[in-house]
Image (cartoon, rainbow, N blue to C red; front, top):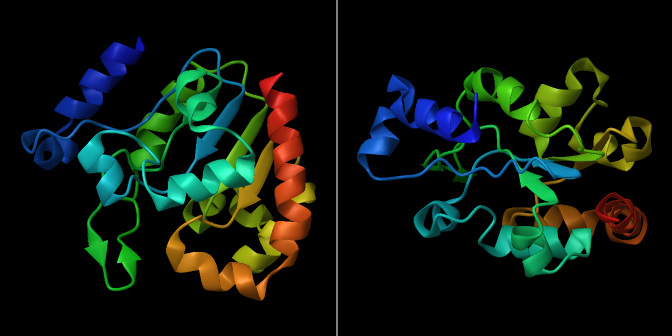
Length: 192
């Protein structure tokens, strides 16, 4: 299948009919030349409305952690973004709703085949870690992020860059001093 065929299949899938009827586009980017893949939970409201993944405060924070410019992130075709759900799931009690169950299992395998050059996969947030690390995760998100080196070179687990997680970052200063510099180094290596 081509990317156009997969996109068309996603849009015409009955499970996505509500989003397609609203004129929403599935938000993902899987260029064949990608060397870095970001697997996150789902687009936020701003991203969905602007039709641009990570086009919000979370995206600004993620790009800062990665040490990349906005242009490198969006225009290089070296960074792929493949959320667990390609549509904004709606608002919950404490932030956005989680991605729909089964969506990633249905669409990710075919899309992953299109990116043979990926060297580094960032698992952003607990949902991505749960799906891709499974039982290899630590006892919780904090421990998994702290033990990031155990998942290298394939995966680099990260807390979600949402403003809702600023408190977590303050309580875990090792993230900024130890994890972010290593992430930037690995991103630069993968972008060479």
